[in-house]
Length: 142
Image (tube, rainbow, N blue to C red; front, side, top):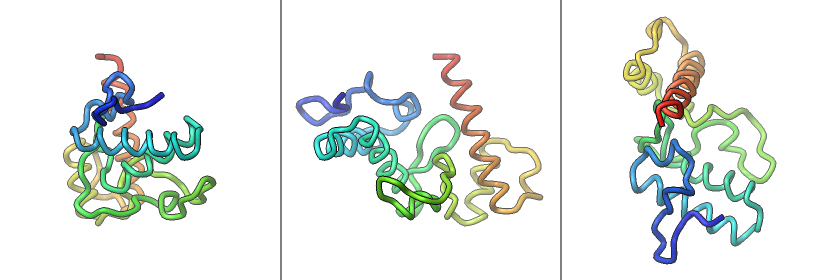
């Protein structure tokens, strides 16, 4: 199902909820990448993977929405390997390649307890868990 209309604007009813709660640019990035991949590959599932990969290149998931990353690039080992069958593990939209101080800032905004004692990998996991909780909570209120 196309995610953009004839004019190229994102169709909000077709976007995943976390992307609906994100900036217009994030919505456009996802929708345009999805539609281009759908035309190229003909598979809805692959188009979704490509669209999320494009989104993760410039955005990171913070809570229940996507925010612009300070530096573009792959966000985790799975994103770095790329292709239809990537290797590595996904960090669920968290920018695992970000600096520890950036991850600490995100953890502070998400009110993660014990963050000052966490290693970088633990911060990534804690942020990923907090993001899932925030998304689940947002779904219940929608």
